[in-house]
Each structure stands twice: as C-alpha cells, then as structure tokens.
Image 1 (cartoon, rainbow, N blue to C red):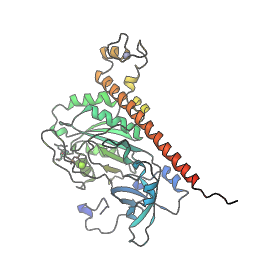
Image 2: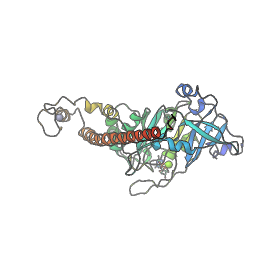
Image 3: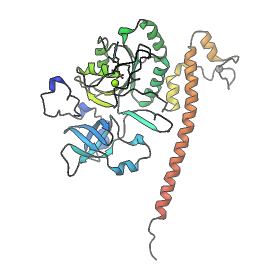
Image 4: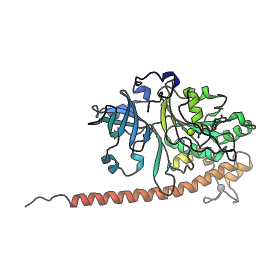
Length: 374
Ligand SMILES: Nc1nc2c(ncn2[C@@H]2O[C@H](COP(=O)(O)OP(=O)(O)O)[C@@H](O)[C@H]2O)c(=O)[nH]1
Ligand SMILES: [Mg+2]
Ligand SMILES: [Zn+2]
C-alpha cells in the first residue's frame, strides 16, 4: 500500500503497480555519478519509513527495503540512516517475495533538512533528504509567529534547498496585509504565498513552484494545514487531516509519519508531522547569511566589544533609531547568536568524543591483530 496513488478514487480499480522512471522520482546527475561504481545494484527512493521497513519507489515499482544490522552497527549518528527522500541501492532479498529487498548503501545526499533531535540528546535528525524546496507553512490564526518562520528559514538555508513561505488559512484572517508586511520584513526576498487550503486560493501557484523531478518538503507546526494543502494539490485525500483546538489553533498530530508522494505535474512532495521544537542544527555562516541585514552593521560600532544595547556609537541602535533596521531583527539575531555558541560548543564536544571512540576502536583492532610467529 505504499504506492501514493493507491488511495486515489481514479486508480482504485487499477491493480497494476505504477512504474516510475528514475527522473520522475527525482534522480539527478549527482546520484548517477555515485552509481557508476555500483552498477549491479538497483537505485530506489525512500518514500516512507515504518521502523525497519522502508517503503521504496523504484523503476521496478514499489518495494519494501530492509536495513541489515551491519549498517546499523557501522553508523555513529542516526542521521546516517536512510530517511525519507534518500536514494538507496538495493539487492533482491533471498527467500522472500519479489517486492522485498535489502538496502546495501545510502547515496550521498544532495541536500538535507536537519534539526537537533527533540529532547535532551544532542544529535542530528534529518527530517527530509534530497529536497529542492522547503514549504514553510504557518497558519494565519493563533499559530502565526514570525520568529518561528525566521527559525525555519535559517534551517532551510542550511539544508541546501530553497525556502517558500506559505501562509495558510487566509479565509479566516482579518489582517492579512499587516501579517504580510511583518513576514516581508524577515523574508528578505524569499517568496511568500498566502493560500487557503479551504478555498483553494493560491494553491495552483504553490504547485507551480514544484517543477518536474523536484522535491518539496512541507514543514511547519501541527495543525497549520500541511496535509490539507498536499491533498488539494494531489487532487485526492491521501493524507489524514485533523481538527485543531479552538483555543490555541494547535493540531493534534494527525500526521504521524513522513511520506513522499508524486504529483500529476511531475513534482514530488513530502508531508511531515508537525514539529514541536525546531532546535537549531546549522552552521554559523548560514545563520549570519540569513541575517545579512543585521550583519551589515556588525563591526561598525564605536566599541569592538559592543553589546548593541545602550553603548554610545552603536551602529545597530543607530540603524534602529533611523528606521533602517527592525529592533526585533536585532533581538532575533542576538538570540540566534547565543544559541549558535551553545550549539558549536556541544557540536565540538560531540566531534571530540567521536574521534576518541574511533581512536579506541583503532588501537583495539591493531592490538588484536595476530602477530607473525618468528
Ligand atoms: N479555515 C481553514 N482551515 C484549514 C485550512 N487548511 C487546513 N485547515 C484545517 O486545519 C486543520 C488541520 O489541518 P491539517 O492539514 O491536518 O494540518 P497539519 O497538521 O499541518 O497537516 C484541519 O481541520 C483542516 O481542515 C484553511 O486554509 N483554512
Ligand atoms: Mg498533517
Ligand atoms: Zn553596537
């Protein structure tokens, strides 16, 4: 049941599996290069993961991929395991039906949207791999939060994909112009699409952003309408959608898994469950590039150690007073700066402990190496 068209009323009588070409699944020269030395293996794209069962789409139709324990043992971070959007190379499984295969290798990713894994643990979670675009969806209701969009923008610029800001539920918004101008302030040229998944406003335009063979990940809090938007651009109800609480517009996490599916215009989309926290997993340069409007004034203050608060000769405070810069932008920039410093410290500590572990493994393996008898 992993064929995305299985739920379509139009194809429900058609029992032949849908065949795909690699191009229609998003194959690019970058992946082809990696295949050249592995020609005996079959490439397939991960469309969904259920624990150890990977739903795959390939030129041979839908497949179920199993990950051997060997691969799980080799990795140092869960981020190295295949995830939705990844390209894997598979071989037929012995003693099983034809649709079951063994995943032998994950191809290097062209892009990936990462965040820090939720909770205390410090590790990377790859939310979606090999994506060309990220639709950052926000509801124009109680969910509306500019700082959150800023955060998604930093992570998206870090992913290697291009962001599109989607403001959903225009049908219930009474101050769209005000909200639009607030978003424009932080978007800095990123396209902004006001849409309504209820009335279909703007959805055709949104769909047109996804060119044939391109993959868009749809991200945002629970209840903002991600699944409703995707169902509407798919043209049928593939994904379950949920009620939102009246009090705070929060959804109830109706979508519990990530899934890639194909659009009739040749594009691909990935639906995702809402993320409660999106802690940063990005490099500092990306963060700074996202805040280039603020960065432009850094280094211009009278004091080199200026905290940009009440010091005389502060270029940032002057820019704010002159109306050149939004005070909230500086505020966000400083908050990200603190978060970045913390991230860098934890990241470097993680690297260090990983290296230590590798050294240990290495010395152990050389110690155990049989020595030649004299
Ligand atoms: N008024 C309004 N409600 C919407 C719109 N889009 C989605 N919804 C409702 O918002 C709720 C959550 O939608 P869902 O697609 O499940 O959100 P998701 O968690 O982001 O996937 C559902 O009750 C939808 O009917 C919209 O454009 N306008
Ligand atoms: Mg959903
Ligand atoms: Zn200053």
